[in-house]
Image 1 (cartoon, rainbow, N blue to C red):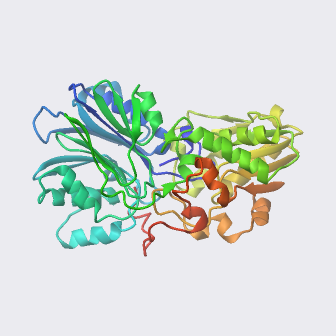
Image 2: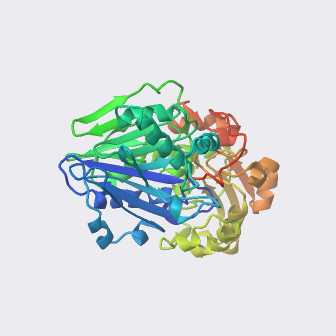
Length: 478
């Protein structure tokens, strides 16, 4: 999930979670490492979080876990972490869209079954979740949650009954899934990471001393002092046990379709996703905007946080001064991070304020990463003008959102997307801007060093996987 980095959500767009796993081969407790890893991934999920750990040398099947609604530092304290004894574990931060904000859906999932236990954390959305879930229910499965992650866990447990290892069970289970998944799974003696063949969501491998780490982003490795080893390849399954890392690339069969919005918005600016600097991607997006949509202006400002680097890129290219015009309240907790439109609209000024002395009497270029419904963008433009800006020219470091996303991002249905029913000129009027320019979709490869293996379906409608016949994102939401 994502509200904006550090909690501000100008456009109401969310990526739905972050995953983190640690296996300390020397036997040390890993709960505190997972805590700090999740803290670094907080931008990916601010509604709930959880940690589950086990001891690879202890009784098989004994798992200790702690979960709760809220931010990482709200859910966990030193006393809770001290009780989580174990040298292998999985953590998760989560955001949900409407209808699934309940305790039962908090991850990681812990499954007790005849072969032992599984701890599972999932980032992504399955497009065939409902179909597989119904099939399992008709064969006797009873589900405790409304998340598609439980479908994955159940499939793995069922396959494990007929295979010799948990990695074979995971492999067989994944054959039945379609859509986006980056998984961190722990069995009593192994930690396993898996990424769907398209690589929609990121997953990286790190190492610190004699501990192996799996995480959604490299910034989480930095936070715990771990060395980045490599990205998990799209379609790859990695198995980590006391003998080290083994890899299965038998699912690496299609051209990757990595989410381009990881670079524009979701990932933290200090992360690298599949070898590409997120910060550099955003600088490049700003430069392209300045080339495509030049404007006479006095200063360039970015909407925190993911708009900042793109604004710097615009300023560099246009040779217009870059200044900080917004002060952000970094201490707004989950009280204001709600998936309802009414909550979004009422909380903008709580989270953001304009420096009047910076913008008064100035022609301002305001750079942001996206416009979804347009409501919040209009409020920010109004804030700038109320603070005395003589002109506000909005530049967006992504193309217009025209289609929903089914792969782990809550880009809503078409009727809620302002660009689906309005021209750029109409949107400009609706948000009260003096001009509006979007990034050209044809130039997206420039953001990722010319790589064309990305998904831009929310802009183009070209889905790498056939979308579900029923839009079940509100019901089976991760």
